[in-house]
Image 1 (tube, helix red, strand yellow):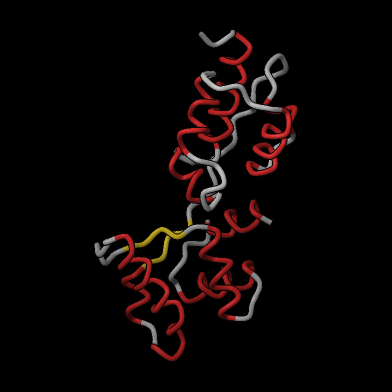
Image 2 (tube, rainbow, N blue to C red):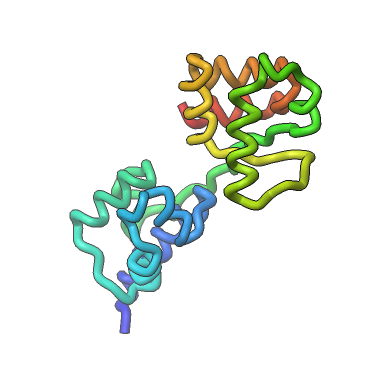
Amino acid sequence: MPSDYAKSLGARLRAIRTQQGLSLHGVEEKSRGRWKAVVVGSYERGDRAVTVQKLAELAEFYGVPVAELLPGGNSPAPVAPTPKLVINLERLAQLPKEKVGPLARYVATIQSQRGDYNGKVLSIRQEDLRSLAVIYDKSPAELTEEFISWGVLDPEARGAVESSS
């Protein structure tokens, strides 16, 4: 039976994960298998003891100080959700292919992988924007501005880029 401390530690781990909008499976995907969903879930339930080393590594993965994960202090401050990066597919289809070719191909690949063909919008992740920035040879912030000027990203996307820098 998990101790109260293990339960509190697990609750802190879960709070940080959910604030970042990650499911247990999402943690496994984002970490490329480094953190297995079943293991993180067992830490969060307090069913499995987490070593100091593993806790430090998890804190680094989540991008938070280790102290944020430890019970006994203040509970983690709620984090405002990061503005979403939503590509306007209808607008994208109206733009010249020579201008938007790399973006259109990238979006088509994501749609194919997800089986998401609603045709109106497509949410992308910060990592997608960084990849596109490399393709376009721009910084993520510069590319965001360009996409906003094309009308394929909403101006609120600036907040998503600023908060990730």
